[in-house]
Image (tube, rainbow, N blue to C red; front, side, top):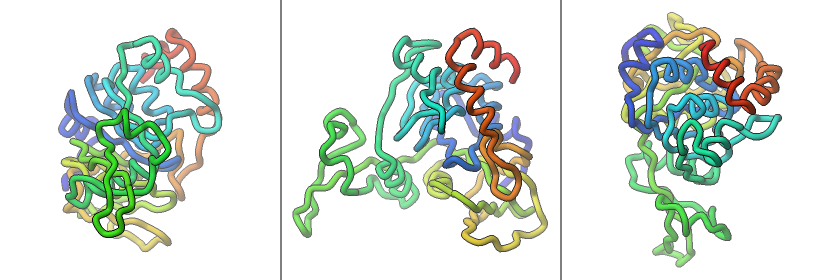
Length: 263
């Protein structure tokens, strides 16, 4: 593990054409890292995320993405992602390919990738048309019971980026609260960048905490308030006003372009 600045970490780990997973479920979303990817002008990325929200709306609108792999996309509590819709419906700033999954399917894909397996298996997707139209899904039959199941191809992103509350000076990372699939995303990825609120001498135990050992982490960057406008439990609350404001900003290409100039 290497302790770096945010700009240095993005420059070293995120490359044009990469498959990139920026994970965080309502909480600890790596927004500051996403903004640095935008500032560094990364292009042709395949963006992977269980729940694309405004952070991927911003990256899509900025022209970073050529493809989106996801389960649910929206501005939480508000409505649609208008930059995502503009890219899919009108090709602005350029066309966006999409690959849709369920939440359970995405989670199983990360788990398979983290486990070194080629695919995961679940009972989901039955009764939908997704298997017919998605190359990373296939119907399989259990060799023991004969039950028809769905296989989901493993996810192994080139780089995973997550935000966490803290790391110690040896590079062990600790996060707690709603942890989503951050651990699985890091373990499945070839490279990883963890942004943290702070670096401490030692990690004090926290109820329900996840600790990622330094040997699974490529780089750590100290980035206070790096999840804003989402929240970091124990550090700051969610900025609901910004999520509401984003709806008006993202509806207009001109207002979005103006906002982009402020990064």
